[in-house]
Image: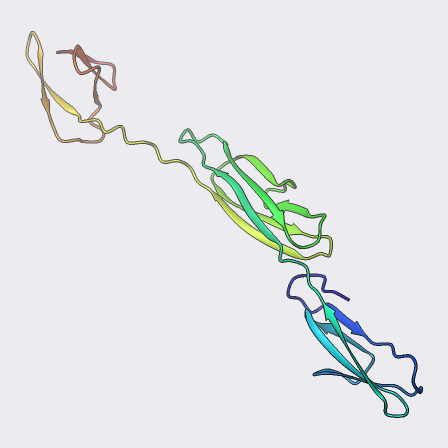
Length: 193
C-alpha cells in the first residue's frame, strides 16, 4: 500500500506465497519475519519466502508516495496608502491527493482572497488523505509617498511677501502653488508673491 502523505510512514507491504510445499516463512530485508510489514516509508522492499522444503523465492515490492503539497502565491497585492481594505492574495495548490480543502485564518475557503486589511493571513490546505500544508502571506500597506516639498518662510511687508527658501521642514504648513502666484498655508491664509 502506498503512502497517504508525502514522507509519512503509512505504507505497507504484504507477501502471499503459493506453490511449493506449505509451511512458508517470510523474511523482509531489514524488517520482520512476517508476511506483512506496516508503518513503512516509501521505497523498495524485498521479501524472501521459504517453503516447507527450504525452497527459496524472493520478490521486491515498491511503496510509492504522493508529491509534497505545495502552495504558491500567484499574486500578492499591497494595500494602497488610503488604508482601505484593498489587499488580496491569489494562490495555487499542487501535489498531495486532490480534491483539496482550503481554510484561511479569516475563515475564507477559496484559493483567492481579497478585500484584505494589512496583516498576516495563514492558509491551511488539507488533501483527500487528510495531509496538511500551511503557508503564511503578509499583506502590507504602501507607505505614504514623500512629496519632496521644500517649505518656504514668508517675509511679509505691507504690500507684498518675499519668499525665503528654507531647509525642508515637515509641518511648516506652507505649500507653493505652481511656483508663482500665491502661497496658501494649511490654515487657508494666502500670501501674494
